[in-house]
View 1 (cartoon, rainbow, N blue to C red):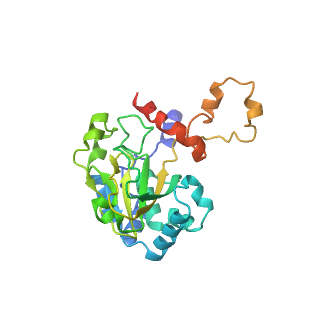
View 2 (view 1 turned 30 degrees about the vertical axis):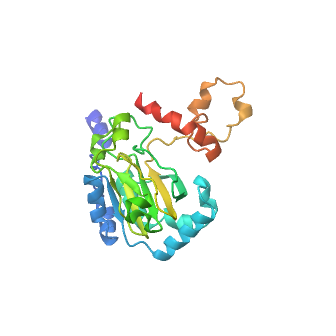
View 3 (view 1 turned 90 degrees about the vertical axis):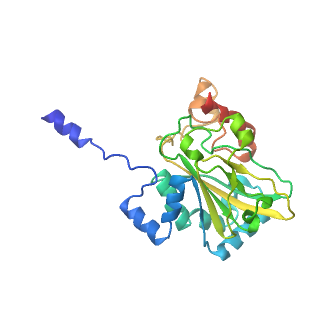
Length: 275
């Protein structure tokens, strides 16, 4: 009897299906007009949030242009970034995608001129081994500040609809072929959104002018460290300790580092989850 009572006390409700919001969140997404966006994310793996305040978009664009490619340091440069990452529509979709108490993972402003850098086909869940879990681990929002996403020549994001259902990274051959890719078409003052599992990249910009966007990524809480090691963590404390401690504390990877430290380590780690 006691054992049975203990088991019952520790029963948990069934996990909610991916992109099936709680009653409270479902009401919020209805009020915000996001129901079709959630359906798009479930079925094709990407969507476009329309009707974002043009004034907010203009201020965000100005902040990006004044400090292009500033990476994750942008949050301390202009209060408009805080408005962007706490926008009610972004937070509602992020909660449906990656659960409650999700984390901000990356905030990047970018300016792409004619002939600027492009990204090959990939899934954002770079460090998640295949098969990907049923539930999205991270979700990315691309805030469009101009007309660059209205035509392929502007250098918009490309996406392969339905690719999230493969639940894996594209192979090198698939990345080169890019079969089935289409441009995400989105007007200024809108936000393109794609799941962490969705295969995407970008087209080259072949026309004059600049593509100015903000990429905002949120991630699940699941893999965050439970304990706080900062009170005693220092290079002096680590000096006579086993080298593996640096890895255990996350000091040797590229995550949570300043751009100058992160970028040289970033791409080599992509292969870790695939091997």
